[in-house]
Length: 387
Picture 1 (cartoon, rainbow, N blue to C red):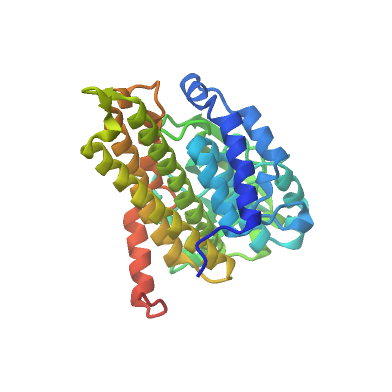
Picture 2 (cartoon, one colour):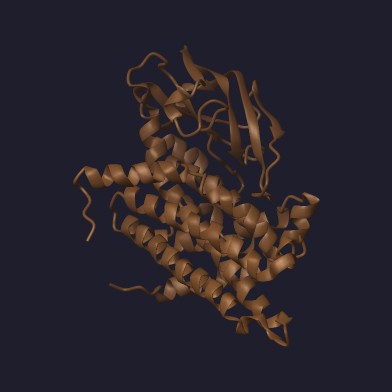
């Protein structure tokens, strides 16, 4: 049982840390306040090959191991969680195309997706269907050699840059159970009838757009049906969400790490009653709680990632990591704010942004209550043993 990163992973982490320190942290607060899209940061991530993390090397991707995948999201979220989101939806979509796409779809899309020339996201959530994906209303009707898509999606990350956007639809609205009639179709940017309506205002998670999308009689060649077979959309999406939950867990660790660093550094600098507040037991207790839970969340995230690297299903492990780490991110950001006192409420300090970013981690890729249900289902199936 090895709890250490190998030399290659340590070197990768060092490169990521230097990138975050040099290019993300100095501008994150300014970009967020002024609503500046992080174009330069995105270009550097593309130059580093990060858009190809989940793409096989034969298509120009990095095909990184899952622990390294987690490191990317941990380190970037430590600098600015919103920027990590740009990579998150893209990587999940690329994973789905790489694992479920036809050979023609892989050849057409993956090389450009690996370099960042193309970018993508994932069109799942609808105004009336989030957690219950089987309740989606978007349909795709086959007419000759084309699917005609009608419906709407919301909270779509990278919507203005996605080309193609994999969209979850019902190709058989009357199927029972509903998931047997669900498919994923790749919709290219600029297709008539495909329109991004607006960016959704958000508490946090800034830096990347989250949009409402409408599909009005959008005609897509049937060759864009992911995998070429109808009725497999839900399975394709759920398999991708396992990696997505490792991503969210790692982002949560990054937020918690940033909160810890802010709290411990401020506690050494801030003086009260003639001494640094780090000398007060009340502050020491907060720092100890943050650090202990942070390290537990990190180890749980790496555990889930390493199980995935071993080729195992990790719905329970990824669910546990995502659930626990996201709760730690919320706790750590709040306690770091308390360590800062009044300054923690100021937009001049990073903890205020961390406090706004953290709650999304308990919602994204399935709410934490759903994660508990996923975990319990795995336990009760008898396929997973604890202890």
